[in-house]
Length: 271
Image 1 (tube, one colour):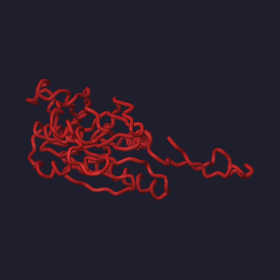
Image 2 (cartoon, helix red, strand yellow):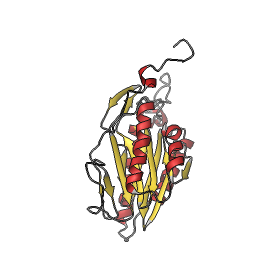
Image 3 (tube, helix red, strand yellow):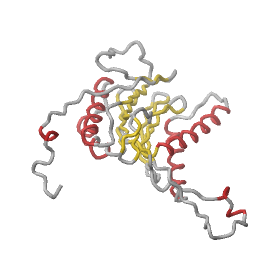
């Protein structure tokens, strides 16, 4: 990660404010990044999906990066952007959850509280001109109430029935607006997310065909779901009692479209 040091090398290093320990450092540009995260509410809870690619500049350098993590007992966090900043956020959240657990009062932080905390962290870092270069999706269920929101790298935040980051804001949200409804079943929700991820795979050069999908539901349905491994492979579940994260899986794709075979036909310009 590129850093900027505010200390002038031509000045004598006499003041304690100018020694190496007091140097102010900034992330100038995100180096290893992840692309879109998509999440939606369905009738029983929250579904969230992201691919597992990590791009080093324009090079798809890493293909097994997990960008969706469980937070506490009730929440899931997905992140686009700089992966090292995401790791720093996870460290903050680990400390927050540990401090909350130390009270041992029978209560625990829900998704709304975690989302509010993230908005304050991102806005605080933005005001220090040292932002965390991430767009975050936070979803979860507590006491039967579904919650889904997002926050940008400068602290802009909102709640909605479906959210997306990165190219998903441009390519997936129109699909979600057309096809999402409040009584969406688990199976239809997975199909809708896979449709969005397939479009992103075709159109986003940073996307990779290796998905991680998490289901956060109100009540445990483990062992009772009609979904089979053959029809929807490696779909994970997280319940009030605990969570399970599945193995990654790939989507079926078709690259025989004429527009893919000769994409420059009819294009204007020298290239």
